[in-house]
Image (cartoon, rainbow over all chains, first blue to last red; front, side, top):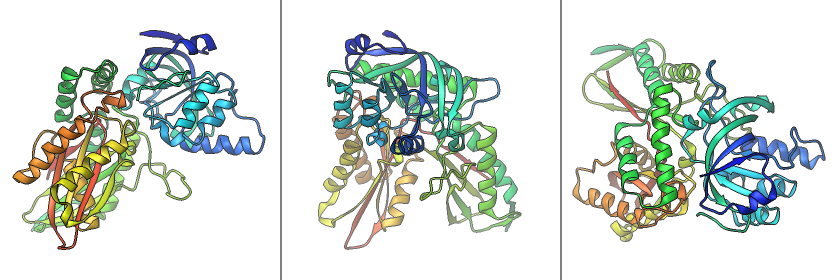
Length: 172
Length: 279
């Protein structure tokens, strides 16, 4: 098991190989279907994004509401393939890593290689376990999108597997 | 004539929805354990172990086992000797869903198909009612996640394609879905009927316990053959390449038209959540 602390430097990214099991600690940002549509509208209009994209890690997820005594509700990954159309552009803008579930397109794989970035697969369906790894959660953009808003999550020992590495390797 | 107030149905569905959101069915838990015990792939074993741990955490903390708490599917079999009184049945069902998704801290995942604006309370539920004999109401509650629903398909096969065609359609659907629907999947299949009833049969098949085969021999054979072929695809848990791609295949059937052979394949992820009650 490889322990990773965010943000990742290029040397660390380059050392990761498809199939490696990792535990991620640091700050990640949730964004799924609707949030990506909004982010792209901002990019089209040359407007500022609600967060720094350089070296950011986007987690394709839409959490359940948090109970009053917990930092987050259940928060496992959603199917990444629905974000195939968005990922390459964000990677070219500096996005450091993606976390989701399931295979993504060849274009995404190419963009990861081109930008020395990595795609981690979290374990789909393990929402309660991932909530346990989330220590803090804060909505930082598009609150009207409810679970589809952008949440900044501080995570500790978040389990995942390297799905696409920065050399073109794939677990699928 | 037995009078039943829809308030009673509402309370039952409210309790069922709260339970279903945080608990896997006993047959699903057993199937995941069995998959973990027999899996030889390293990454798949890690994923299966994580899923078993997750199901324990969800129950201990009374929190959703998966954040996709689904679209609420409610199947009611209503005896024709029942007289329903009180508020409109669909209002009662949607009130139950609305309260459960709020009180359970479940995700609200239902939206307008065009504007994509969230309805905010996970309603409306997908409601199916059937009139049967007797004076009881059987309620089945299934919260259905869409990662797997998205990978489902309906085929209008030619009668000449027969059993081999049915098995091919089932296996092809799972193969095409690959890593995306959160394998190991549970596969519900409808065979026969019309375009619409066939899809409903597939949904109904998912409410059967995993591992219980059809009473009809030819249908049970289709279930067994399909499962064997699916697990030979080596997609594995989460698509990490392993031995267990499906936990089970269940088929429901109905007579169909002489010109057709409809086959619907409804994919369910490994989070099988289903509650049944009889009033």
